[in-house]
Amino acid sequence: MSDYNPSRDDFAALLDESLHGRDMLEGQVVHGLVVGVEKDFIIVDVGLKTEGRISTKEFGAEGANLKVGDTVEVYLERVENAMGEAVISREKARREEAWTRLEAIFNRGEPVMGTIVGRVKGGFTVDMDGASGFLPGSQVDIRPVRDVAPLMGKEQPFAILKMDRPRGNIVVSRRAILEEARAEQRTELVGQLAEGEIRDGVVKNITDYGAFVDLGGIDGLLHVTDMSWKRVSHPSQVLNVGDQVRVQIIKINPDTQRISLGMKQLQSDPWENVDVKYPVGGKFSGRITNITDYGAFVELESGVEGLVHVSEMSWTKKNVHPGKIVSTSQEVEVVVLEVDAAKRRVSLGLKQAQENPWDQFLRQHPVGSTIEGEVKNATEFGLFVGFENDIDGMVHLSDLDWNAPGEEAIARYKKGDAVKTKVLDVDVDKERISLGIKQLGSDPMASDTYRKGQTITVTVTEVTSGGIEVKFGEDGAPMSAFVRKSDLSRDRNEQRVERFAIGDRIDAQVTNVDKAARKVSVSIKALEMSAEKEAIEQYGSQDSGASLGDILGAALRDKAGS
Image (cartoon, rainbow, N blue to C red; front, side):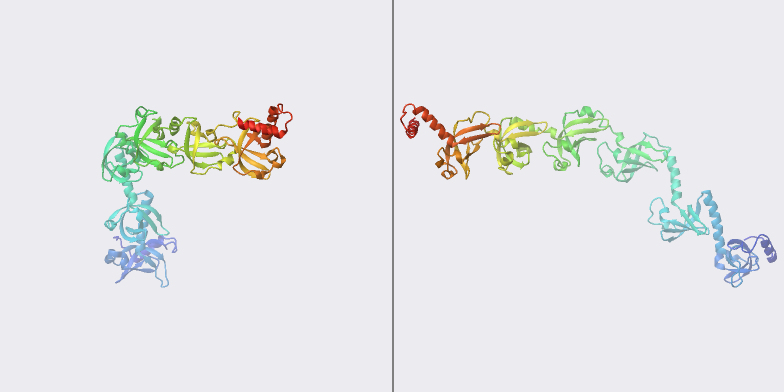
């Protein structure tokens, strides 16, 4: 309270001189004169020929000492109400004072002292010497705080984030103060560190991508790729929270003050001279560490891994997931295919550590040899035959039969049949084996096996109204021909198909050989006429008076006797 106690008239005169009008006072803090002190109210004259009443409670401890003649600052809400009294408030005056003071602090960017006094939805209420602010839960501390009780009722600094006087909103932050203090401390500590320096620290936290190490008041990130030269799937495989570790400072970012740490940098690099240790073509043992869709990684030594691409995993298993060929932790033998020391890459081959099954097949079954296999599949190109070591060979349609069309010949075979084949060609590079079935027998058209005028024995396979179907030749290379009715006999009366039955064996004469068309024509009639001609030439000159029947009879007797 002020020691100056002007009279009521003097106070009113002074106040009138400082005002431009009644309306300009509303909504402002004005000086008032205490003109009455009652049990529950303080009566204040604001100099406008009106008085206002304020509850003693609004003055707090100050209210007990007020007396008539004291001056107080009050907030004038309305000059005159329905009862002719001024509507004034000491509490709002104090709040306005606080707002004016806080706005000045906010504009200067300085912290303000306040006390957390209550909990509200989403945060807390902070009292700042008459003004109430909102402290969001996320702004209490740098890290989530489970128990705020120790912070309640304790005066401490806050940063003002936002002020909206018309709405009466003030948003403050305790976290901003802590972060600023922490940033200052961090700047000081970072200035004490140097890249390349080796420090001892404690693992403070572990994430999927690395571990945070406390270097004594400041944290550095130890990325998972800098923990070890060998593959590390997760940091927890190497470290635990609380572990004492020795690390090297790899990099300090002056802008963000982030510190990158490394552990593997304190160990020798296993990739040095890797091309000397693992030359191309060398065979080495390793352990499967990881399996992917495109291959498998093999650890040759701690920190050195090579990739076996899926195409280099098996000679015979194509388009198979690597996981069906090898398993994690399996010990395998591999061959080095390529080394790129600069990119830290080693290409390995799993199948190259085993004998090429096509080389092995060619060694055991050279071209021209006969081998038995199982029919695996029949396609429009030919017949696939399977052998040991999961390799296949193909019999092309044209190599199934000397005479029958490929489509007809392939119909004789079904999956699972055991077949004998001849090895025609083995292309190791292209991993192809060419086989033949017809080559197991000689080509009846390749030489003079059949000649025009030759007498052969045929077997009836079918009897039709127009003639008979016959077959002849070796079992491995059978031939077929159709004998028309007119060729069944020299005698027209004997040209009857019913004379023949399936399975009958008959002699006939070859009348034509078409090698291009692979066709041989035969005739029973031609054989009879040839025999007649031969008999006449041999016996007719000796016995000119004999009949044709006598001549033929003599020829047949002579042939039977010989």
